[in-house]
Amino acid sequence: MRKLAATLGFFLLCTSFCLAQPSSPTAKTYVKIDAPVVALVHVRVIDGTGAPPREDQNVILSQGKIQSISDASSVNIPHGAQVVDLHGSTVIPGLVGMHDHMFYPTGNAIFAEMAYSFPRLYLAGGVTTIRTTGSLEPYTDLELKKAIDAGKIPGPHMHVTGPYLEGAGSWALQMHQLTGPDDAVKTVNFWLDEGVDNFKAYMFITHDELAAAIKAAHKRGAKVTGHLCSVGFREAAELGIDDLEHGFFVDTEFDPGKQENICPEHTAENPEGMIKLDPNSGPLHDTIQYLVAHHVALTSTLPVFEMGSFPGRPTLEPRVLDALSIDSRLQILQRRVQVADSAAIRRRYGSEGSPWPQAFKKEEEFEYAFAKAGGLLLAGLDPTGMGGVIAGFGDQREVELLVEAGFTPLEAIHIATANGAQYLGELDRIGTLAPGKQADLVVIKGDPSRNIADIENVETVFKDGVGYDSARLIESAKGMVGSR
Image 1 (cartoon, helix red, strand yellow):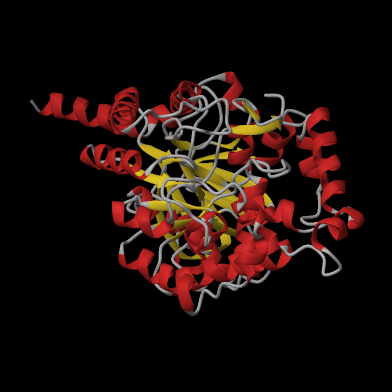
Image 2 (cartoon, one colour):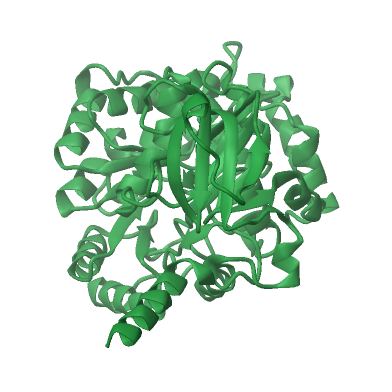
């Protein structure tokens, strides 16, 4: 009996840890540090709780877990440990990307699965856990998850979202359009059986279809988020939705011509209306209070809006251009020229210029007010829109934009790590750094608590205690985004 118990204990350990280790030559190519015990010495620790950084720490990793975090002067390094001297560097928890698709726009409202490049780039950027938040190829995503979990390819832990729960009239050819509440229930149950663990409702879903989907998902312990249009935020909160994507940029409840179950055609073209709303008083403030009272989370996706709101923003870094295929690179450059076309802006908006930068600032104010009111703010990138928002790099940019929105660097890191883990129900394992937790952490050259741009200086990403080489992963994906 004792021997059986020991065997069973080893089996359970391997199902949670051994299977996550790199097992193929392909995956092992990107491993920099792999030892039973690793000592990260003389490193600054930002633990993700929002607490101040701890200087000159030793972090001991053992068998995929964090064994200890202590002052470097008071800890003996375990015998046989691989020692990594990290003077001048910082460790933070692995980012938890909460709007991290596996697809990318290729033109004419068609999106292609980035099954090769995106898993590598997410991991290289310090993202150790993702929620796909809408799948166009859910079977591909599920098989990717299996391959990553088996150690066959490098990539983050994945929470796979089912196919979009979309209603009739959708603009997206790749999405199934629900035929009513019964179809919504059937779709939810089918994909839960296939292995997804969450859902995303989309723009044309009706009130009754959304209500049926939420009820069916909750019955089986799954959550539902939404990028909505036909249904407003407060209406969705009343139905019990768990999360809302993108912020008030997509909330149609403030449109004076909004009709029940109808997505207004001009909503995405009404930045002037957004500017007039105040997150600290009036209707928008009331919506914030309503969402908080109903325990609805909100996912920030500031990078996808920044790309189309400002001429010249963000700066197109060489690393982003290098990651893009030739066709995708040309496409994004052409779109940026269009955004910056001053003559076109004057024709469309008059002498006052584009209102989009002001609307973007208002979105930042909304997200800040939501979090300060007690709302659970999550972080993602959404690699869609105009293109140019790239897996991993965009997750880092999201953290930088949260700081621009008014959060301190430590608060922004907390949002991008602990809050996502909390929503996923995994805060006991990931999201913060503490003894006993999973060894998912990011080694950064510099100090992002003082200069948030340092979050881009990722050197090594530990996932399940294995340290992956960020630069090598990025190099392997050069020229691939938009292609595969």
